[in-house]
Image (tube, rainbow, N blue to C red; front, side):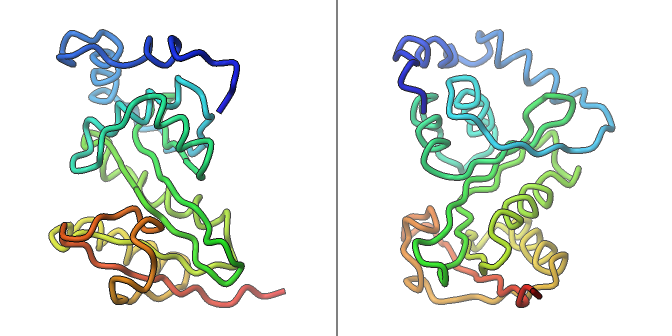
Length: 199
């Protein structure tokens, strides 16, 4: 996160409440409803107020993901790998991940979010694939809530697409903070075991 960015710059990008009175949010929501048939593009987020705001826009639409301040989102981008999915420069999704500390630890995928209006366009799979490409020698650990069958289906499709297997593991196998979860909210932990990378 740039030290040259003032608190005022972050605060200036916080949405006006109620959201229907925020012109930037309203314009973005309109563009989401009229997306072209162009393919999804993935880019690494920048730890600045603009990408922090893009994450917040998506957090608002992608319940039950926690909505955080623009500044907190920029800090997350500075500390972890955050990828943004876009269609025609319109932000439609993001993924937060981080590798474990040891080389033998998995890549932890903590959040995959795609705006409802942009779902079924391949953004979730594209985000997972681009994230996995950043740590090709690591297994992948993640968690889903019991009632989120769409997320489980996506994870199974993703595992199959990279020639890997997915299996449930006991909660506590990995730290909750690494998985980005809180206990008591019906989460299940999973590991995607990747085939060895050939030299």
